[in-house]
Figure (tube, rainbow, N blue to C red):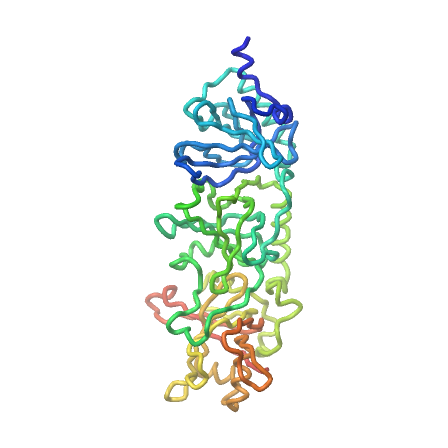
Length: 465
């Protein structure tokens, strides 16, 4: 009888009252933290589990192991964990279960829709019992009608983030890439446009230190880009595996996840997320209500003629540019639409910011023979590209050869350079280029390598401020 009682599972609500006692628990994993090193030589991670008796906030479980591999390798939120001989404790008024590597054990089972009753991972001290399958089956039936996301606070959209802050973010993993031996990058998306940060880069250093087109060391392959949505910001999330261990194989492309306590930063005007030791990850089922809402919003933007406009450009971009009347009825596209267009050559109309130029000095805009030759860096919420102002397109853009003072004023306005009333500029001030309407055409420079030599030019666009 005693042996049987030793393996009786307590409801989580009852375990909360069993302070300083060793108990056996089984529950649904609502979230799990990224594994980190403890202050000693061990590895540590935290889980939050729920059952029918305690499903609002859930019970925190702190787990220690000798190596990262010996921690629970959770495949998905909603999976089931069986815990034996964990010690109930309290800290800062929160009751939690402490897993001790010397006498505790665990087993992980597939959760909702799971058919296999064999655990997919067990700890070294785990001993199965016949009644385990009954509890696993009961939890699978219960979680079928339970909304896992109800156990935490609401998340934000990318358009609501602020630099240096941590938020909960529901997003879809689009791509996973290893950028270094110990660093991975996740490309995630929620359908909204991230805010536009001010630029701190110096325009005069563009030749020596050009503004990057992306955060990853090398641009993604075209076949990868073509799988991305063409509306909404693609957020890069940095995963430094030296400091924070994440089960990379579990965050495969196509999965929806919820990052809890994700840090948001800006580099050279580009947003990125950072996983920290306090970040937790939750995998969401495709039928989750939040996911369905994100997908509906995206489909609504796709079907609208104007919703390809950046959110922050509404109700219309700054009227410092004009495009030719013959493209008035051409639909707006995003830079991602342009980059993933199925043909090399094409003509497009979009709303962008001019965030850098080469050369920067107006005196160098023309070659010795008088031809305009300028490389502009354009951005919108979906990406950045280089686009050239060349020859007759430059003549149209600048309306010929305007007076120098007028040209300087126009140029400063386009690049978001802060001016003083006397006409000078404010040195080292952050820049905030306005949204402008322009026409872009794509073409190839080498007929033997049409995609590899693909470039972009601005045309039929006039700077009129």
